[in-house]
Length: 233
Image (cartoon, rainbow, N blue to C red):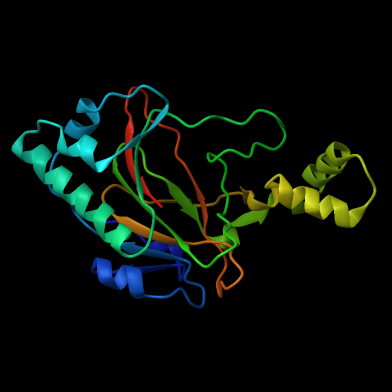
């Protein structure tokens, strides 16, 4: 089971898929979790899929073509069911095998890759769903424990140098255009919350109709020699 005792009012736990899909975010809640203990061998799926790139999309037909043990078949059934339920809900899920994400070193003082705590943004009302079946799992951070990086004086000063003009309105547009405003720095002595393996999460994102703060999250540093199996949409 995932330990949410240290996340105060941010996380709401549900008991089934339907509740996860239908329950709206409200108040301080911007993360929902269907706590599950899965059966099956997901590592077998990871080992039997060929990875030609650092991140590879796995299509349902790819899974169906695998020759798996009984435990591997149980894992495949769960994975395909999760995919199909989300798709039927109107989402666009993808199944990924991940060796590692690309790191961003264009601005050493301000990385904007997914290893940095960030929020997702969309022009339309939607949520982020994700589940790590195997490998290192993502983290979330209570909003009270993060500071928007563009508000940190020394970082803001460097960004203004990068922008190179004195137009304040243009500077704010620059921050948004290059996604600097989506990233957050953990405060001292923070406690990121691991999303664990097998649990399906729904995270609030920044969109025009949202009534809650977007959820701060980051991808994990991968375990050496171990690919991740992730469903996300």
